[in-house]
Image (cartoon, rainbow, N blue to C red; front, side, top):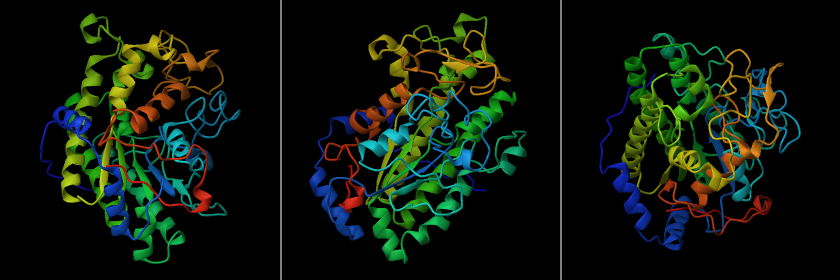
Length: 402
């Protein structure tokens, strides 16, 4: 179990955000230099994608492992796939939209066994219920994850087991990973969710944050050492806008709610605290590894934009879950989406929240676009040269965003 790293605040996240948004970027020169360093050639996009995280990114690992009693049942998957795929959503996830935009196939889940799948274009290591911290570390603090004992460290072990099947030597692996996009998260949300829903003291939950950040930082460090050059690091969502939090921690005090959105202020402030420390860690790692492109993905503010102006994005329901077990926010702790007795809305595209902690395909599409094409990645992520259809089979180069 890693201990928290020392985080040096080089510049405030807000100032950093404004500086990087206004700074011009010479993408062609940066791409050429980085490609030469890893032995690759310049091209329009990445040749593979690897994703780590929890149910926000899981495209089927929990299904393959038989760990999803509700996300593996309809109406999950109904909108796009027409069947459950293990995704806790009515359709595609953020990682799916990113893969599509980069011209790559939707990621094949990798639960730890090779079998007969082809992982040439990347793999999804994310597993629903996974925590950033080791389950023993959490259990010692009275936080018990009944869904899985898998942590970010376990996902990294699976990746290390997979890597020798994709490249034959450390130098070859560096070239291969230099042409890959790594998505490190979102991770850590389950650590906090379990703690809050088990009524662990707020002070104790806050003490977890540096440990979670250290675990994410250590994972990024390891991926860079293996050869990864481009890593996207998503922050946490506004927890106080999730239907599960709104129902579980309902309050009679108006002061507990954001008057503009109806979200619970306490939990959004906590998510921002996590994100502030994560951004500081990203800045630290950027300085330690100047040859790498480590980007922060601002999921929080992308989602808050939807809750602040739902009508502008076609949403008629901001906080109520589309799928759930009833109540003011359509959430019942004993009737999670997909369990017999739950109900789903007629048109998920008009909802932001899909269930207790997950968003709809419509919301995820916007977040992915915000990160890839809008102002919600630091530095900005430019995919203007990426194809709209799969061209990974051609073996054409890669793209680095600076």
